[in-house]
Image 1 (cartoon, rainbow, N blue to C red):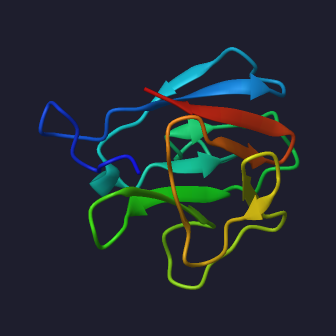
Image 2: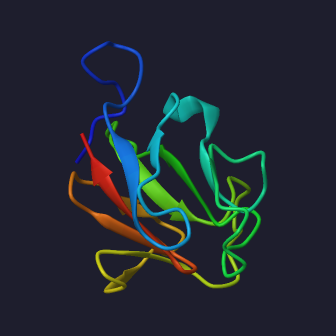
Image 3: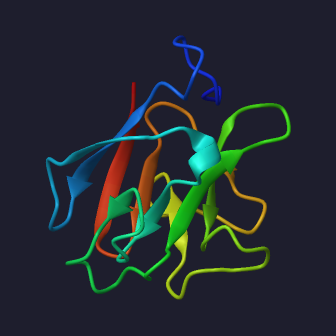
Length: 120
């Protein structure tokens, strides 16, 4: 998995590139994981997908696993929350449940009509 602390000693060393949907070609750098960067339609998210009406306001968020790796979880950071349409990893094969999904380089995240690739 991708470690929460990157080579700079501050934050995870990856970004998300939109590969399909209204924002195709956009690249989002990820702020430090402890800032709970979210994905959704709300402008309060690190990755705001305002034009994708199939995405919840707070669709998903990133946090750390107990062993220090980056994890994607459905819903916002409130315990027990979940999005309306679900968050999927790797071509909709794996739905991200409350326990989340440890991210790896090359993973494909699907939210609404948007797909993004985890890249270094």
